[in-house]
Length: 370
Image 1 (spheres, one colour):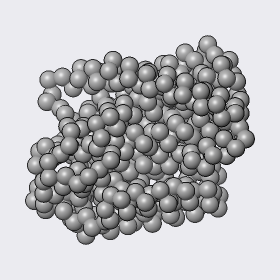
Image 2 (tube, helix red, strand yellow):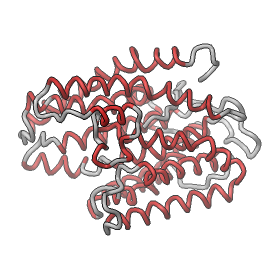
Image 3 (spheres, one colour):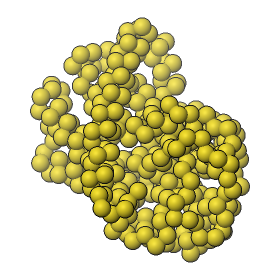
């Protein structure tokens, strides 16, 4: 969940990029930033559900609304590929790209990892990582070994996937620029087919362990985002509009309970997400109405990475206050959720303003990097 699109307000109506080489600075896509917040909120709702804040009828409603919240991470993977392809600079060198990615994700990751380590040694009921596990987490390679995938800050497993994606992106971008529109469309189709095959294989236990957190298994989602972004750049995207794409994404989301838990959820939502993201981008490019472009939603989207990284630590820490799986009634469950949300959002704001932004400026100072 690390790609970011900076909002500058409602964009003017402009032509979609043509098949010519893209300019050095393409228009911002604020709707994608707003959508990032929605995906982060789905993950938050999932963890509130998993930690048993609600019991009885309220618990069943929360399960219906957020039981498929893990698909928010799949949305991040597709979105990350889209935004990186959209913002790729012509002639950019791989070291410059990797430097910008490190500056984008590493500061918040290190701070939340340190916070998780402090919690492990000060709060009851939390496992203490071994030195090897801690180092693997800091280096973002822990998700390659399933027993370590939730070391320290549990959500950082997705950053390990993103780190793998970033390592391959310069080569992938070069390939896409050579393929053209037809090749990009074919690659998008192959990516979807690969996800379906992997989902089937995971459901039938073809592998010894689930592939949900395995970086190589999540690569097709990222590649799909890169491919559809290339089609938008070439003005060859022919997908449905924003409303129809959103409807398909919602339908896929509520189909998740019909499949095997884990990687199989991706097969329900990936097509809807792959349609929704370029539809929102095209709406921004053409100045079409978009709920996701609202100023406050975009602001929350800017905080979404920090919120994503810190919220589960807050929910974990709250077990010392609420207990494990308290199964509150509706009023108490809402109050506990509101408290966890408020603390998570407040810490996200601190992380964004005091860590993420200044650290990125410091790491990229004097290099003319966006």
